[in-house]
Amino acid sequence: MMDLQEGALMLLGPTMNAKVAFELSERLPHLPLRMQEHSRRAMAFATRMQRLGLRVAYPGLPDHPHHARLAAMGNPGYGFGGMLCVDMGTEDRANRLMHHLQNTTQFGLMAVSLGYYETLMSCSGSSTSSEMPPEDRARAGISPGLVRMSVGYNGTLEQRWAQFERALALMQPAAPQQQLHKGAADRGAADAGSNNCKH
Image 1 (cartoon, rainbow, N blue to C red):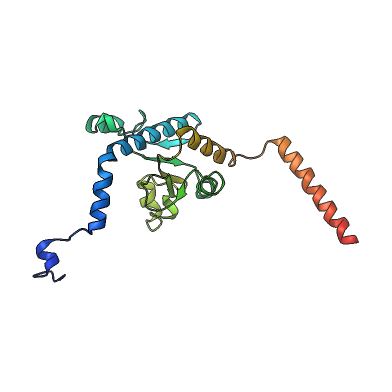
Image 2: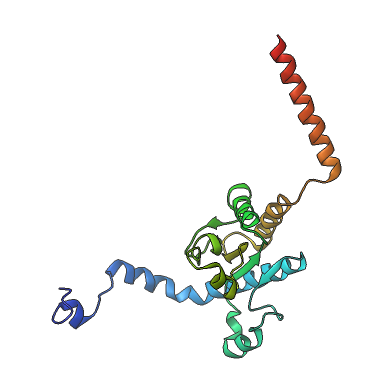
């Protein structure tokens, strides 16, 4: 069947599974609506992230090096797509942010294949591009802390943004007063443990 010279697959071409073909036909009519929402939310996220001082790469932002070219080529009704990148500086910070986004605030899911109705994210330098030599990654603009994100459309925009901000807040060091209270609490717990050991 798969003989490269006379096999049916070679002569007739691959045939899509009937169930897959049916599911695709069911989803195609509302594909434009989904892509518009992907783009709308990605643009909103990129703009808000940039206002927070984060290093963001998204072709819909005017300061993106290819913004004008893509604006001229694309269909304005569908925006600039649902993919964006945010650079957290180091791999550790990128992984910590993704951990909080997935496990603490339920903002999205870590994955290596992006593009879904859920928000998906990955740290390229330690996953899909990890086998590239460091100099090639640097040339391609893949920094150690680069987080690629496909912005989903489930939940509301404000709900998801609140989840992102909460995760980002967990990345910040505690204020001096909070650290003082924490230190006192830790010392109190240690003293209590020491007293318990004496009895």
